[in-house]
Image 1 (cartoon, rainbow, N blue to C red):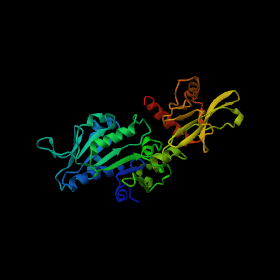
Image 2 (image 1 turned 90 degrees about the vertical axis):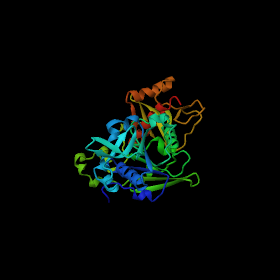
Image 3 (image 1 turned 60 degrees about the vertical axis):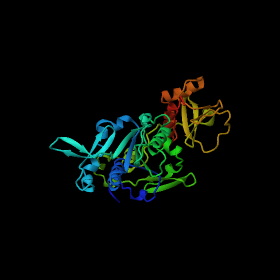
Image 4 (image 1 turned 30 degrees about the vertical axis):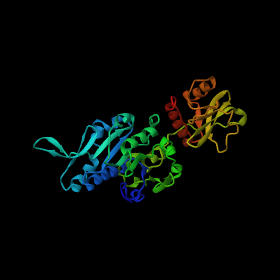
Length: 367
């Protein structure tokens, strides 16, 4: 097994979208940035790259200036350009192959950019510009445990549309760490089997009667090769195992250790999210009230009257979108359980689903 990730296997699929996710620091970004240089130089400095990030802060200042440094440190640029260039210079949102002129004390860049940068949060500013020579698009860190932008998937598609226009010669690469499998991208792109995908495999999806192909690679773990592993040798720590092995990261959520009877359940409501159906039970036990949330494997018996939380718009009054809400006394009561840490989960997977639902429902409140 190679110490770091390489693109060989996924490039053989010749897909339009190439989604690559796995453990942190395994070389995904390095491989794509190196690939962008190869494409540019081998095409005689014509085929350019677009680098997409979520926030404008990710493509500004030192954070942006240094993204190619790891590739440069290997001497790859000097080697592939036969000594013509020895640095990549960042200026005004663009990357240029360049030389540092020691005599003039200045950068001497090539006159066409190697790559352009885009921030989804600022995509409105890029609509009027044309990028006819961009043939590679890299969206790094598309998975996050923090906040997704409102309507982020549409912002992403609009950014792609701005770059691609009427062409069909562009390959899109989406890179992520295994930090959140309950995200807007997998659902919106119809990637239904990602949560069951095994490490070291590539799944191929064909959409639009085969016109669109999406290759999804769950990268094999390189953990045993990492010298840094000694810093994470904590016994029986599931969180650490996820970090070093590339397994999907989950927070540790409170589990219920109290036994209760069906007669202790005073109210039931449901959460429907990304094809996951959860049953939420408000329980009174020994004069204490709390909520227990678990998976539901059967259909909802009274879909026209039961309280159902779903991000999908529904005209029925029993369907709600925002889980944390004070619109009605009932919603206020449910919200208090979350505010007072009186919510317990069947397992960490269920807790992760609820956490993501709450964040997405908060972003969707004005839509």
